Length: 429
Image 1 (cartoon, one colour):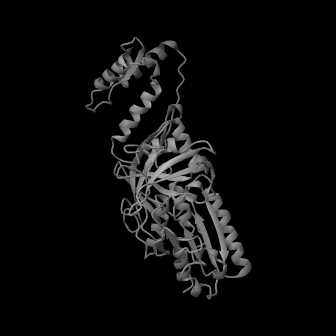
Image 2 (image 1 turned 90 degrees about the vertical axis):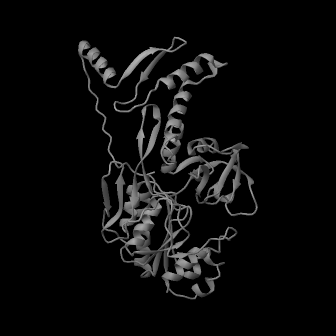
Image 3 (image 1 turned 30 degrees about the horizontal axis):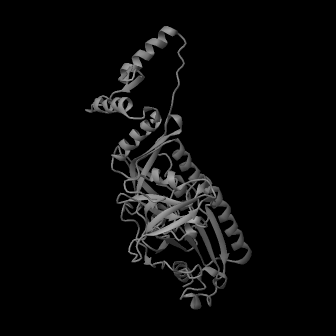
């Protein structure tokens, strides 16, 4: 879920002369190795052969297509468009990369709604790990969070249907649905002795602001009042700023700028801040340019991230502006649900010595997906590169290990946020 590293240009040529038009069509059919024929049931079929230089025979594909069309017991029940989408999905899945995916029109629409910040469902970012559908992170304030779903939870079943072999797109399609309706998930939490459990969740309209913030004294921070460290923390003086960033979506940069302006206004009014906590926990990522924009707020120049592309080229992404928070001490909170663009920001601030990381090892998604919009509203997202942090490390699979590992207990109360307490303690030292 990143911004496009490559531009796509479409050119349209209008040819008025009928002779030229017919000749041009014939040329393009030959150039693209397209043939027009009839299926076994006499329906017209347009066949495109493999690209030049690719030793693949598509005869088997069309042989199976023809036999299914002719011999299936209920031919009228066959949805030709679904066959096409299914074939494409299977081809893309055969690449073996969980992030290279085909999105039919409805799934593509849902994907774009996610980044826009409003959709109907349970409010959880899904992913694949070792071939199983998992919760990457529940979004804050959503039915998924209220139901107790956690990062890395396995979704074994949806409405009693096994999810083994499912793609993320299949899972999203079934779990999403109109608000007010219920979906049942069978969940297994890794390392839990309790075993699988069924969770029924009522879908809702999920509208999640990408940025929330506050400025408080230690005694005013209710989230840490139940933590063991709170007694010593609330006795200290100083004011702490806090920014929670839930995703890198369409409106994130604007929301971020408004929040920073408000924090700077609070500092101007009441005095210098002791530090800032940037909370990237359960942030599943989003646009790459959003990650560069956010990191630039804190960095004094330099490279935020480098991208090594599939063609062997390397592109460095430097800071893109003069930030307003380049001097304030920072602690970044991360956990198992921090992924993609969130890991880029956390890693860049760590490598450039601008921040310490507190929490748990991050998800480990360090590859770049380029989305290509296709005819009919579908799209294909292809892994076209990988990210390298300023220090040269790759995020893929291993993730980021915090400077201070602070586990969040599964049964922790909302007022006993040990990770936030540790971050504040560091800033007030």
